Image (cartoon, rainbow, N blue to C red; front, top):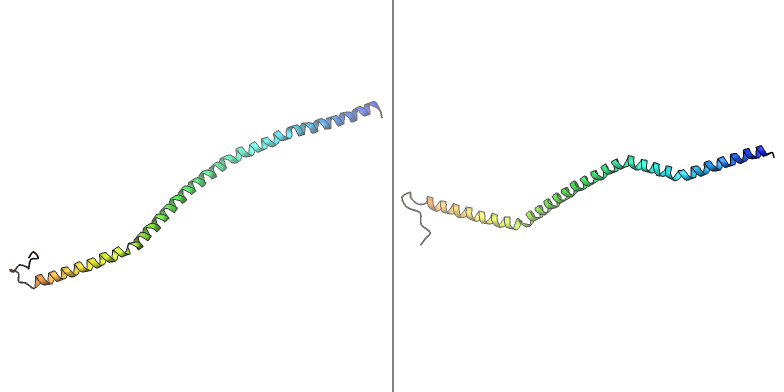
Amino acid sequence: MEEPEMQLKGKKVTDKFTESVYVLANEPSVALYRLQEHVRRSLPELAQHKADMQRWEEQSQGAIYTVEYACSAVKNLVDSSVYFRSVEGLLKQAISIRDHMNATAQGHSPEEPPPSSSA
């Protein structure tokens, strides 16, 4: 082979080698740049999703508290049915006494005072 032909082949090999080294040397920085670009584009949307999720969690916690409080109130109403029955019985007894007193009072003449309970 001739010297110029050898130099041309040597130059081609060194150019390809230099290009390969350049690409390999810069490839990580290009990848990091693309990653940074992706993060910069995606981050606002991800932050908004996070804020939305936190707001929904707060609303859910409030709703759960409300439901638990309502369930507790209903349970307390069911448990207090004994007291309601007792009050109902006392009211019926009071109505009966009132009716008896009215009947007794109507049985006397208007000038006659009703019998006093202080004997």
